[in-house]
Length: 254
Image (cartoon, rainbow, N blue to C red; front, side):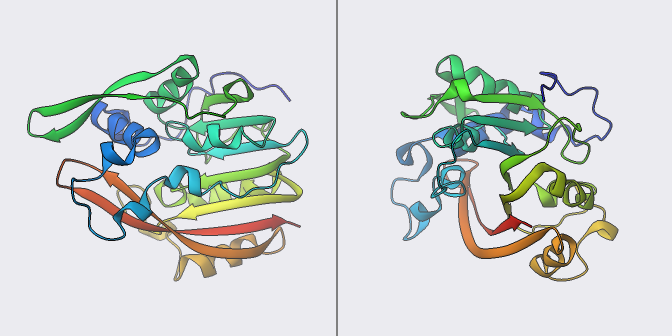
């Protein structure tokens, strides 16, 4: 079903943190930066293994004729564009207007931004789409993962990376997932399990292990197929990096 190009107004507020120039630049670098642009001159062993997170979380998926994919929490869109290699229709949704505008702008050509290096020092860079993606297959919308429109439904794949533990009420998304994924379809939930009351009140955290909680919440609608760890690296400055590991769980809609 067709949906509006702007899902607005949004009833749930998130911090303006994700609307800043600095975070936009960090995520453009995270999604589209080259190893030389991200890594320090002499990276420690294993650091490069955490690159290309937005590519790795959607890699190895079988092509589905006329397949439809939904990328929730798409940020600046790299996973959405990667999905366009094997899916005919891809919808990317994020709460941040700056992120969505940047993701959509990339379909028209390179996007200039500045990498923060130190104090007032920065380096001008460009983000560009990689060869082989199909931008004409991708649409981006601003929306709230806890209050998605009913028109979003019946996807062959739903991908939600580093989103769940940034929601005020994550159960609202979990309860919506069965109507988003068609029977036999695939769900990819990726989370670093970094539950913080900055984003999620403690009463809405899992009562224990995040994976056990997901199994409990999704059982009856989804079958857990596999799990794996996917590290990622976000460069903040020339000498400060976030290295984190996310739990990727793959599910099949019953």
